[in-house]
Amino acid sequence: MARWEILAPRRPLAVGKTVRGVNNLGLVALNTLLLRLLFPAAAVGMATFAARQGWGLFNYLDTPYLLAVVVSVVAMDFVIWLQHVMVHAVPALWRLHRVHHADLDYDVTTGARFHPIEMILSMIIKLATVALLGPPVLAVLIFEVLLNGTAMFNHGNVRLPLPLDCVLRWLVVTPDMHRVHHSVEDDEANSNFGFNLPWWDRLFGTYRDQPRRGHDGMTIGIHGYRDPKQVDRLPGMLALPFRGRVTGYAINRREWSAPKEREATDAGQAHACGAAPGHRRHPGRGVPRPVRS
Image (tube, rainbow, N blue to C red; front, side):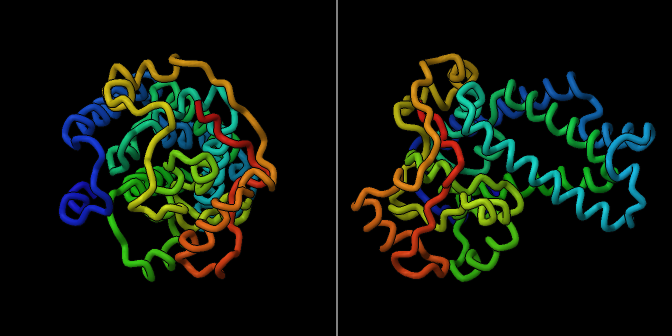
């Protein structure tokens, strides 16, 4: 993905790639070391332990092995999607998750840029899911490979031909689909939560086709967090959850996306993959808005 970004970038980068990339990867290295120390067996080890202890749903049910693998991968993906919604909805969790969103650019290194505390909480949720579900070890291995691979793919600063993108986004989250989620605009950031499978956003009404300003015109990041030293340097990223005061929290209602100028722009630019002109695909009805401060 990094080579693809160099050969055919989707958007020009707002800040220098080298310094920002080194700091993002430094955070990845720190998280990897921390998780290895705290959870040496990780999710695959938990699946092995659960099988030996007879823990979890699939260790009680007489389910065909292949079916158990497929259902387990889909179920774990749904848990990750739901977790992603919650870290946007709960102010304390948003403080952690905004480290991921505060990146001033969007490329393959963004896909693994998370605060260490969020990584620890995410691993605890994953281990609990494996213990309750009792998935085959192969299912957990497949899920981990898919999750990491697709996270690098859909955070890539790359361009897919529009017809191909429109087909692929029924099967997997594409870069253009997930990039909308990293917009500074609240309604766009409150959409397209999927990392791997794209179905949950369509099913629960959080799918958005395109950003209203287009991918070249949209701004990446969070309003009020535009200082590279604060958001794209390792010390600033580690301190970010503890900086500032979270003040805004509201539940989405149908009218929150109603301004006429927003409707007009949406109708003209936000339906590249087949929605009829004027058709509203505004996300987040009934889903808590992200805290954007």
